[in-house]
Image (cartoon, rainbow over all chains, first blue to last red):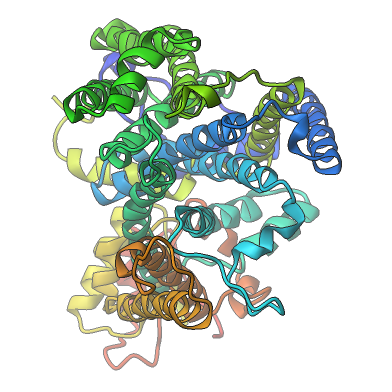
Length: 467
Length: 170
């Protein structure tokens, strides 16, 4: 790894508009970014060992659940969705910021997207992997998961498509597939670069295989640009639709606290809110450990913090509207849920944690000092993720625990297996993530060169650093 | 085939522009990153990928509608609170997702297959120094069979900043 490229003249790292510090040459830039893969730092193996161990614990807990049945979880009637669906919604929401960064910002031609899109998109894939685990286990008999797919079975029955649950299956599997294609297409030129940089023959073979014979002729690039743009254009409405569909699992039900028209946009904003927080949680340590301050600059942190502030404000607004609508509806059950049960009921603590983490904490991001300090920002992102998990827990569990009939009310406590699976997925997520960091160039090399070229073109003639 | 090797993106762009103005049509390039203006100078037409992707997307919409309609309204009708068996509104989410799925898969597969990928080997791999075209070198390929070909192009490329100009058997 080369050290950060020396700054010419004024201190660029404090400027909010600089997304690439210095003007590293093609070779220099490639060497820095491929270096992370060709000579990975020694600590990464230890991290993989620890997270791999947690992954094994997850697999053990999953095996135990499958062999015994989901009675080992804390679920009860009426709280039937509980932890599993909370975790599902939380994980899939986290994935959304990755697609937002790689697709939506691509369409808006935002330069700051370049350095972080591969990273964020991979985070999406791995988060969706964790998310997908929960509904499948929650089926109770996960080995029959293929009953969700319309195939001509000997039983002569078909899935019921007027239920929102088959929508979920299609939405999540499409989301995973499209994200994977989009991410892999972006990777191909960089895998070819690693193939051509690698000194060892085995690496040239392996990366060459995955680069699919990429050569970067002008005709290929032309087609690549169009295909990449199309995938970006397709992934943008997709990301909005996926969490909207997830929210419809709740919104089209009659349960007080779920049956709300504001759910789709509210869920999408919440998803982006937690997702941007997760990108920052991962990015801040990696940026420091790999000395990537020249390509992931303070400007990136600042812009993502602003996205957290924006989406956090939409979330706070949604909370207000949700409560207002419940009051305005005049419906006694809705009013009970929002004005009494959530705020002062047996699980009221979750509501107040949500308000503290998702509404109050992001307000510090109005201050530039908090947006540009990696340490302070890291703390904020942890609060946001805790808050967003609690929000889903609050929505699902409090609504189920106290529904229409007080005689059927029952509270909920997660079991040890529930907790093991939740923390196990975090380990599994990090395990996959660090595997990526170790083996795949996680900052897009070709795209960064392109961005550097564009910046050069724009500033040619004037002073190199702008005004 | 004549290969002119550059080490700056601007140089290859201006060299290609000059050749384009002199009437060259059989040009190609190897570059480490996409350069839309270079593609313009090389005379590469915009790919028609979007048309196929659109068709694939629409077939995805149609196919998912047909499946939902036939399974839920014809083959296995269930009366849910008297709601219509062919309830189009509840089909929309799945139809939308399938549209995206078919379109995205088509874009990905066509991009690869039209570019001759995946392939394990092609003749250009044997060219000396080609590995640097994915790192920091820009190659401009000129075909001597081009109707506008002039042997003086070698010197012209050197003037444009080419590090080396060489002739290889194609």
